[in-house]
Length: 160
Image (cartoon, rainbow, N blue to C red; front, top):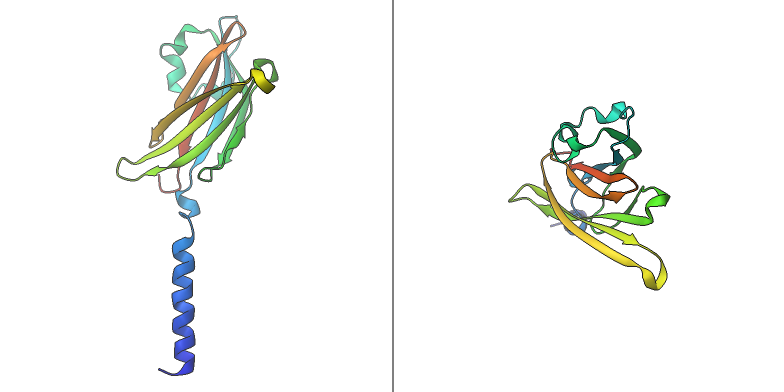
């Protein structure tokens, strides 16, 4: 083997090692669409952007008359890197969504949702772990004002 062949072979081995160390491709990293919704029994018109969510027409959500879209954002997720979610300041909460990884055998994406209420020593954290399959959404619901605060989280990968 000539010196040029040895150099090319060494470069090839080096490239293979670099590629093996690179995490899953961007097409395997999920993108999550998060809607922050306020459900209330006050009379009024619901946000037109929410009409395409069939789950809001079923119980327990169908018990509410009006749905206000407070925030809508899409996040490109990176494993174990939290993203800050948009919540109303009046909720007294902060929230982070963390992609924990993929289970290919079950075709599911695993997440943690961390909600923190309060500040300093009075902080209380609530952590919810969940998995999504395909394009099925996850709903997180908690009391808010005279109704409910709903986080609608729908995630998928480029290979979905």
